[in-house]
Image 1: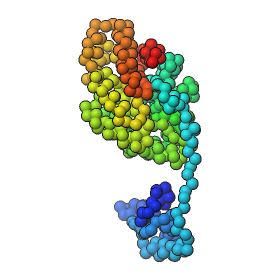
Image 2: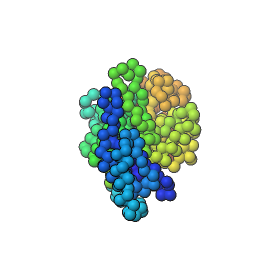
Image 3: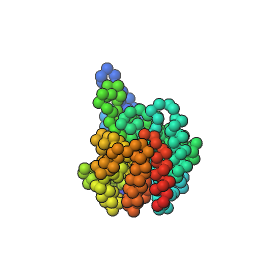
Length: 384
């Protein structure tokens, strides 16, 4: 409570503070407060000196606490009530730079590519794919955080590995599921120390019903609260900020709600959004609207459709992805190579169409096919 009153702006406010008399201890189903009355009183005195106008005690406060508190406050009466200003921690924007972020701020189109982390401990294919994407011109690799709530190699650890071994920016996804506040805070400190400056914050998929007896979910935040927490933590405890991104579902039936939530997220510290794939006319219109209404960077979502079956599966089974039936029909009867060529062609057309409305492109790698994404980057994105 003392730390809180030091941090908050309470100029012109009649502030009342009444802390418990220490931490509670439960013995034989009874709750006891064993805080030292003298220590309690000294803390109350500091609160008064920080500007509290009314002070007292809540649970566990006994007559002795009040007596000691009165003694301490009588000593404080001669002390000036002018509020002490806590020195601000140096906050360096330069310390938080990354090549991806610099390019985005300079108004250049950026290329982010999502690459699924391994479902086991073998990282060879993942790193080989990351090297291929870097060579093709990707600016940053994004890594999902255990999508559909199934365990995969940790996104943050992989982001650190990419930074160290590829000298390339990585954008780990961080869900609100699986970590409480302490675990989240510890992870953020580690990411900053490893040079990771960009994070995508999402709520995260729920644990599948059939696994809930074995796997317990933890949701201490939603994505807006998590963004506010990370922003506050960076200002208090880090040399510079994280650049926080969120997800924007341009395929949502009620896009008004998506825009409202996105605006709330920017108020909490998010600077940009990666959209779901733009594979329908409605998604395109929603993307245009987002450009008009959001004061944030936008990376337009591109996922290459690789077969007719793949198109129907995504449209039917994957939340947040809609596929135009006209696109699905184009894949009928195509073999693998013909389908890949068509995927490059369709993706190139979508990229050209959305280019005026986005600050970059967010390409999602289907089935680990990094070669396909490299083709799209080299044959389509690099031309713009």
